[in-house]
Image (cartoon, rainbow, N blue to C red):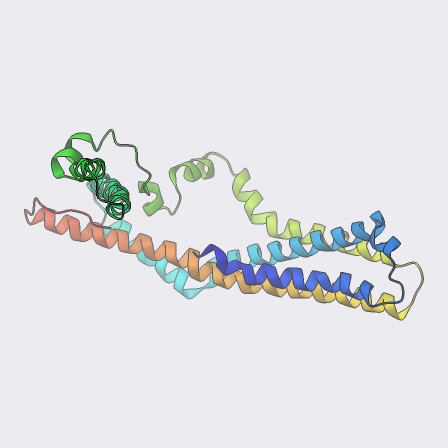
Length: 277
């Protein structure tokens, strides 16, 4: 998922929150003493915290809801369960080992090729040519076969639990050994929403001294910011489901399909089968 996709939602959050400050700036009640007071910024902070909690709670709640109701997710989960029951054999572990090895080799070659491209752009010299020759030798089959086990390179390592259950092995252990993490995750949206309301109401207490039209405008702006962040959270939940949840399910399906193809080649006696990412 593109990490920048969520920026518009948080940008809208800060825009709605800034309405509170802008209202103070255009009213007759504004003064430099007030904007520099701890009471003023305490009010701003409580509104900010309340809106952030509402944004998070509505996002978490709708993501969990969509996971249980979205037909695409339910169909993908069903397909994965059927594939696990019908297609996966004891050699699935062998496939994952081979696939991870292929991933490591690919990452190593990409790393060396990046270094080669940098050297090739430099001015020709005896030192440069020697470095290029050395790097080229490090991506030969002989070198990789000899040193791949000891090579330290970052790559995405697939675990069986990730494909079978959708959890990395550490997460799965926690899920099996203790129900606390699951309970915490399930009740978090409701908890955030419940504490956001008293925090939000406390900001009204700071405002209510003398009734005036300005007070009504301030309260209205806070309500608008609260509602807009609630809607932003619901909107982002759909983006998250499309770009993260469904992507992960589709990845697991395609991974099992690659395994089935690998198994068929293996059964047919193809000893040169490889797993390419």
